[in-house]
Amino acid sequence: MAYGPAQDIITSATPRLEGQEVQEYLGPVSSHLVAGTNIFSDIAASFSDLFGGRSKSYRKQLEKINEEVIGQLKEKAANRGANALVGLQIDNDQISGQNKEMFMVTASATAVRVESRSEPSPKREAEKEEPITANEMNVEEKTVRLRRKHENGTLQLSDENWRFLIENRVSDFAGIAQDTVTGSLEASGVTPRQRTHLNNGPDYFLSLSDKKAKEHLYEMTAHDNLEVADWAIGVLEEGNMLDLSQVEALLGEDFYSGQKPALEILTRVDKSYYEQSDIPRLEALKLQIERSFGKRAEVFEVEKSGTFSSGTEKVWQIKEGARNSMDRDYCSETGLDMYGFGKTETKPEEAIQALETKVSALHRRFSSS
Image (cartoon, rainbow, N blue to C red; front, top):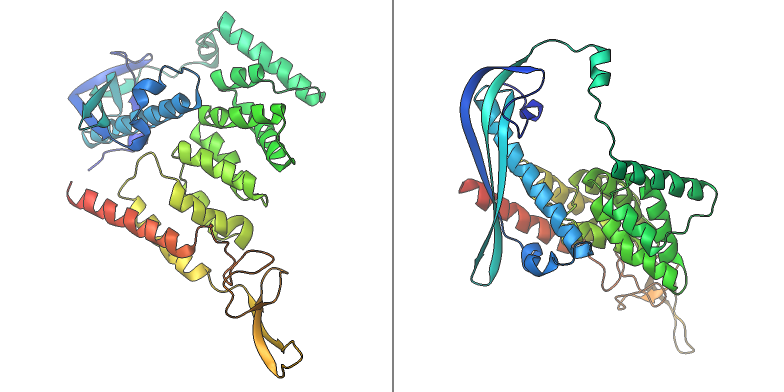
């Protein structure tokens, strides 16, 4: 049983904490996590491209795995009554065998109880502010110059500027990046400049924190332009950024700009890691899908056409499209079926099957642990 919230555990790679005094050493704690997914299958080759999109994605996955293993350490420390971890060490080992690549992450630290020596005064807090290095200052200055150009309407997101934003993870350009990529996808034809935006956009969003990236990418998935929505889902897929809360919200929105993208996300996008608490949420999503989708076409009777025809016949119509005979599966104008889906679009039953598979896999995993 935990003595305190695990998320409140202070963590340090050093043997002591500034301003804190160790009251009790509670012993070492360690945690192990093995990751073996297709995203790591060619990681050795991909890391040679230091700034490529694939290596950005791998780095993001490794960061998430490290966060998970530290989270496990905090849980163990909290169970011992600790409020801090000192001497944190994280080791990443690559395991190869039978044409598969796996990574084992091991984290260890010492669980301790600490107490603050004294409450620092505002003056002392200000004195402890870290100075900014020359390189950091250069980044801040260039960011300011780019921001001014944007405000003046003269900003050109060249390949060089994109690389600057990516390599320095400049998150306050996320809205500009979203608008730039969206405009490029909506344009008829792709110019070299637009191609630059579309090539760099994924790397940029993958360089940001999950929270910031999801804020913009999930908004793009609800765009009425299908190319914009598909582009955003592709980036979410590469970054393993499935957000169950965002999907729940989309399923409660408009059919075409919310519910349909939600189905696509559920069949294509994964989380970096799953927890036992995800099981009831996935089951709730499955139930929500089962209740939310039905026929969207209007069925009505019309006079039969033709010289030798008489009486009436039933036809169906969807989204201001053509009137179709009942034996036609897809509208001749919209390309949609009676349920509002195109031939290649993800159907509710596909998303339900994907959710059932995930739930079964999680039950199997956690029941055997």
